[in-house]
Length: 317
Ligand code: UFG
Image 1 (cartoon, rainbow, N blue to C red):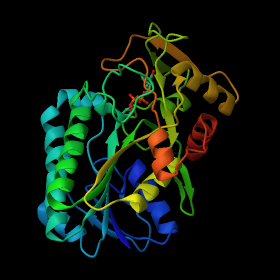
Image 2 (tube, rainbow, N blue to C red; image 1 turned 135 degrees about the vertical axis):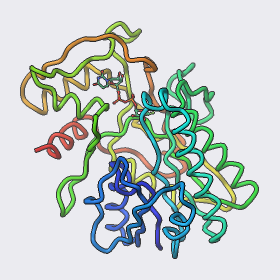
Image 3 (cartoon, protein in one colour; image 1 turned 45 degrees about the vertical axis):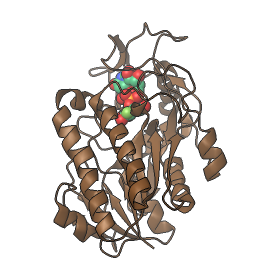
């Protein structure tokens, strides 16, 4: 079976390529490398360096594929607030082109990278797939718009799809070619920032006055390998003309200070940090209810926060 992995040179997409190859899938990648890195592409993979916004390149990349795993898209919350038009164009417009080209080539299976950002500030914790969706930034709004577009496509044209709503993805994967890990510039995510912290440039703790036990935000972290395991299970579970949505997290929350403590243990000394003001747009607590993925996909994450931190540290060595 040949899978088109859009965004297959990014952090999560390249991990998917690695794991799918190891499971015997044939792979094509479509990526413009605006965030990803062409040097992650393994030998034997068909790589189209092109854009989701170019229907000829999308059509070409779909050749001989039976399934699409769709990771490509803009994914920085702060950037989306400043450039909502860009986010709508690339995420929503790009996915529209992808769905149209899939239909022309009679490709009817899709696994999509959605986000917990579709929910916004939760009213009830943990967050269920049926919880209200009130995104608080354009990034989350585009992921929700795409989820809704996929639901319509399934009903009208027989697409079989799964939207996977990621909580906080972390960790790294070791391959024959070295580690695949987050390589963002600038890096905004907590775990790599904590591990890179120095006395001269200490990691900032965004807010210590949140309504949580230690005053810092709580997030639900899931290892990127567990996350991709869920994608493969979702692919095998696709049902004709149905669109299912699944939360992917661990079901547990850790505060920013708890993440720093885990990093202190991994690194073997006290990591410098500085308490600063809250970051705009951050919800206080995000924790997933993952019972649907457990029951329907027979999936459960097996790698804990310490593993996510230590794998990230190893990838930086
Ligand atoms: N944080 C810091 N200092 C930093 C970086 C982050 O204190 O240098 C804090 C943030 O304020 C937040 C927590 O650490 O409370 C996690 O922040 P991340 O930036 O690592 O992740 P987010 O929770 O902001 O966002 C992630 C994805 C989004 C997705 C969201 C959904 O990056 O794409 O999860 O839960 F929308």
